[in-house]
Length: 495
Image (cartoon, rainbow, N blue to C red; front, side, top):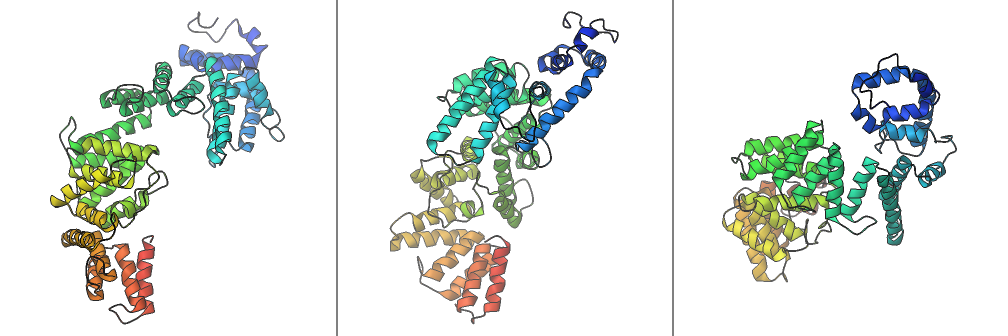
């Protein structure tokens, strides 16, 4: 009908039949495929011809938005947390009941009748429920299976975003056996229709070698296609990779300045839960080490400390400082896995990447293997004179064995090498060894001396122990007020 005309004049002869069924006409007008088939002027003319449909349609859409708000599907700023196209919203608005009394029954009824938009929205709501609740494993599996079936139903009716989320189910094994090849096949189908999120998903699969051969070049090609359509996520993922390439000289000239610039861009502008914390963590290291910028250890420490989260728990306490023996339970999380992969890419080119690989292996961060290898890497880098690695090989001797006198002595020797290079954490650990009499003879005077050197650099752990020395009268005259002052210094830094 319309497709054959190519363009329609304002005096369209077919207006009266359409106006007899304005809602159906509006659905056609707002259909995504329909929009892509016509130019903007044609769509404007169609909407002008059908302006009589606007009041009826607007009231129904408002009712649907009220239902969404009551159902908790809106963010505090009023935006929808579940992306629905205009055609989705119209298709659902025509059937939405009174938002004050209606539950999900109307949505379930429409889904059962084959309404693809209803099946898609119901699946997304159930996924949201699943993410926000603590179900038993059996109920989780049942819910995941239901989500998969709803998305499959909508996909069979050619709903593009349902197909996208169904591909994610195959990628992650949600409600179905994990099948990366199938996920990539489905992503390709949507990406070819110009959906940026699918293009980005294909880029991720190429980065990680999931369902396709691993290729950073192919990943960047897909990200660039998304960027060409205005996707900031696509652009920032390219920036993220370019940061690593510049840092290690992968296919480009090595440049700390360029690496820092790329990572800062991602850190400040990305909202991605995987690449943003990784980029921010590396920005912290660059300031801490003075690479690509003027060295500012305290600024670097603060960035790394503030960047710590449940999804990316690599903060100051587990990265720059040490003294923790319990392994982490984040070996299979996306952020840690990605961080380890990027560090491994650069481990043959840059000592910091190699050090961070060892740190991940030692702490089970993104992996469950390699703690013995970590010790070897720390010792190799320590012998090369890197104070952070000297600190960590000292920690290996301090914590990993039976606590023999020989091991404690080796730990103290490595802590001392780190401390003598001005590493505030090494200074704190030397002071701690004197404080408890492990690896060195107990000596409160020497402990305070090293704690003070560390505290001068703003080390919060050393500040805390100076407070303890004042509180209990170790080397100092007992003074609760001064002790409180030092405790507050450490507390102000989050200890």
